Length: 516
Image (cartoon, rainbow, N blue to C red; front, side, top):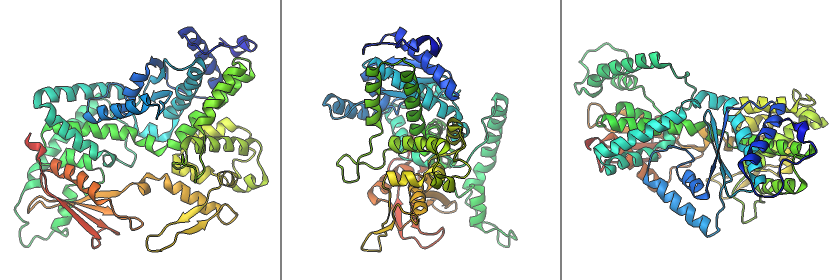
């Protein structure tokens, strides 16, 4: 069906939906999306109930996910809040896979189904397929097969080794999940032949290094090696290592093979979500801009009634609402609001630039191709670099942004920059920094292992802005780490690598998981 065929005839009337209406709406949205130049994976739309949506919530939105007690806890909490009317449900969940799966709720009105399809099946889908982080770090073609494998494997482990033993490994792995990612690009996955070759090489490497790893004989006296024992040990163990789950999977001395495989599964899931953690503003901004642009086009062409358009804009306005800082509803900057505003601002700069825009964005202002500029931004940036590149003075004024310097050594906070000529760059840098995961999350690395003595595992937390870890939580996570390692674990919090620790946390294992 082409758009001209229904320019004077609405696609539907009323709130009720059926599959024929969804089909017609999908075709119309797809036509507009193609006009916008969106490039998407094949779509798979699934209709689910609110209870199934709650279930999807609890398992971090993934289908075919393995079982864990924490998912049931989240389900019970979310369901209770939903039944009491204290929390609403998202209208959709979308999976970064090929085909791209979008879940829509059967309780939605037809207009909401329309909005959700435009938002998820085309906005998020385009972003998943084209952003460089997703291309580098996720395998959209293989994720569903891998989740199916993971679910079956963990189920088999539960039958063979006991539910409690498997759960203890999962508990520990989940506690370390945010420290189970590689932060730098990797090569694309090999084909099956290369995968077999790499598996043989891994086995040979493990056999070659295992004895060296745990030998306790000191280096012979008089050795003329220029490297110290510590340097050789760190070279052998490939330290420092920031991916703690990866190190444990490869080097933990007491873990059994099935336990290492579970760590590998959790690590792969953490890596899969790593790009989404870095692109929250861009991803939601892209999807929100796309649904707004698609639905407004359909309305202009008569495919949506005024009533449907008003209902869609009511939901849209709620999504991009940004409470003021002194509003009880304020919970930080709404990524939908900031992302959508920045996409609209780019469109304005490209099509109707001011003199200020021409000074700040000489390569963008007046370019004339708004969708081309947006597609380029969606493909090549993450939140931090996107804000650093595209946040304009006009938007800084609109959001009334200013920068507060909060130094623990100073009894008073200082307003370091406001939205004026001198403050624009400082505000933009400060806001971009908040979306830098490397700055926002604790930098913890494994730095050494005592191979000669008690096999103690040593880590360093590189302290930023004099902020130490919350001790009780750090000890709880370290306890899981010690249980996986099987020996004592020491965490030094230092301002510079190798410096005198500001604080040291020692934890001994309570349950040696490798003994299960």
